[in-house]
Amino acid sequence: MARMNDKLVNQLQIVANRFPAIETVLLFGSRAHGDYGRNSDIDLAVKTPGITDNDRLAFSGQVENEMDTLLKIDLKRLESASSRLRNETQACYQVIV
Image (cartoon, rainbow, N blue to C red):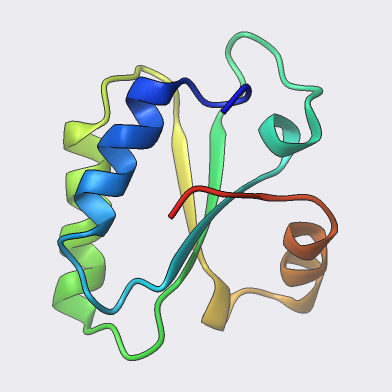
C-alpha cells in the first residue's frame, strides 16, 4: 500500500478481524487519490451491516489506540454516510480489509 504504510495496514486488519460484522474497510480521500500531504488524515469508510453500537464503539476505540500513528483517523460508516460521501468513496478507494 503506497498511501498507507504496511505496518498501519496490518494493524488495521488485525483490529478489523476481531469484529465479524465488519465486511470491508476502504481507504478514501486524499490518501486514496494520492494527493495527500505529510500530515493528512487517514479517511476510512467501513461497511458494517448489523454491527451493534457497542462493537462500533469498541472498533473505533481499538483503531484509535492500536494504530501506531499520530495522524487523525477519520472513520465513516458506509451505511449511514451521505450520498455525497458514498459517491466520493466509490470514485476512488483502496480496499484495506
